[in-house]
Length: 107
Image 1 (cartoon, one colour):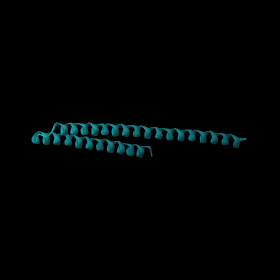
Image 2: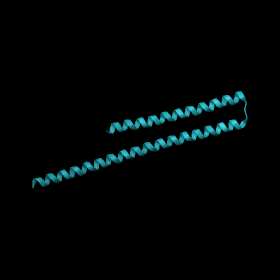
Image 3: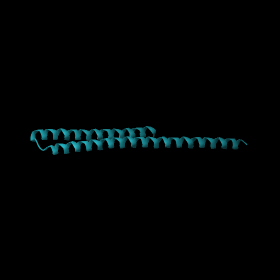
Image 4: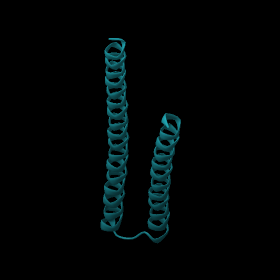
C-alpha cells in the first residue's frame, strides 16, 4: 500500500512538472514568435509592451502553479504520515489489549 502511494505521488509530481515545462515552452515560444513578428512588421511599441506584460503575467501564473503543486504534494505527504501514525497507534493499542487478554486468561 505504501509503495503504491509513492508511485501515485511520483505520478502526480511528474505530471505537474511536465505540465509546467510544457506551459513554459509554450510561453517562451509565444515570446519568440512575437519578437520575430514585431521585428519583421515593425509595429508600434505599445504592442511589444503588451506582449512583454502578457509574458510576464503568464510566467507568474506558471510560478504560482508550481508553488501550488509543491504545496499540494507536501499536504499529501503530511496526510499519509498522519495515517501511518494513526495505524501505528491502533496497532500498539491492539497489542496492549491482546496482552491484557492473555494475562486475564491465565488467571
